Length: 399
Ligand code: ADP
Image (cartoon, rainbow, N blue to C red):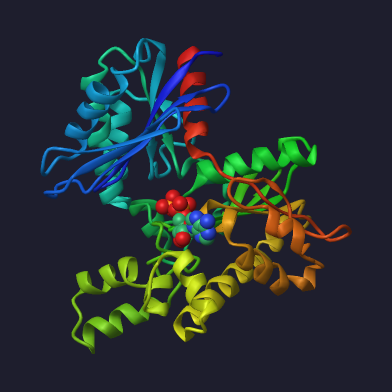
């Protein structure tokens, strides 16, 4: 697979992340972000071999115009680059129960992604726009779908079911699906290599902490429980999402406090979490800065974030029994020394003891064990979802 390049596309509703990746080495030839879709200031920025560039897109551009720009103005400017492409890999948020692994996209797969859109309307509709635009830009290249939910399809019913009437599951697909599967899978594979254990025998708890955050229990290399649910709203305290709440709060706000249902859902998704608690920001760097200045909202946000995460990790001892490692990843997991130290302190009952120097060293893309000798292991592993998408795509097209 030496020179097999894959164009990886991650289409959101108002932005599109893209990368050209060597499927074997994981090297990124180009990476970038088009954003502010459907707005006057739609724009794009990208990095080619370390060189950063940026440009405005035509006003009100969206997926199709962004992909045309990426092809015509970025990829085609690099001599012979597109000739090395073997596939286009698309990150798809929701694959429901239909997709348990990555697949080459055909008409049936497109229909399947459309069917799953009721479970993640914003995301899946954006993915379909991205796939169609990529198909017209590269009509002869195979397109591959890699699902965020696929890794969690191994969860047993006792973990994925809600305690609701059973026919809601059977007839309407109401169940927990989990997300960030590509990231949880990648860091588990890396942990197996680092700890010198076969992937099929490794038990880890993986905490992917970015703007969205989820924690997963992985037993013998398979997801057996995870904190996100039918949608990415359930579970941990996130940047702007509330995570677990009593569902009666929604009824209370609508029937007694005059909120619209739409307003409440917008609040739970976009104005809650770290932003809502701190009143400052959803960005963990700002939370950390303000904690240091003694801001009470930021301190509470940090404490709630760590406490909820530690509770979830502790509860995942139940399906695992034996834990080979706790893994921290995602922007916060990879960089926030304080969060890792606090969470492991909260888990002292399991014997976890942080090594302050090792913890401080594992930042900005550095992988490493952060616990003291003799302690059960916790480690930092930078995630690389794009590489998993590139690997799956290259594997599927060569099969
Ligand atoms: P996304 O879910 O959008 O992919 P990321 O994984 O990039 O998000 O994580 C974003 C979060 O990581 C933000 O809260 C950001 O503040 C935090 N973060 C990123 N870099 C650092 C850093 N160097 N120090 C502290 N927090 C960081």
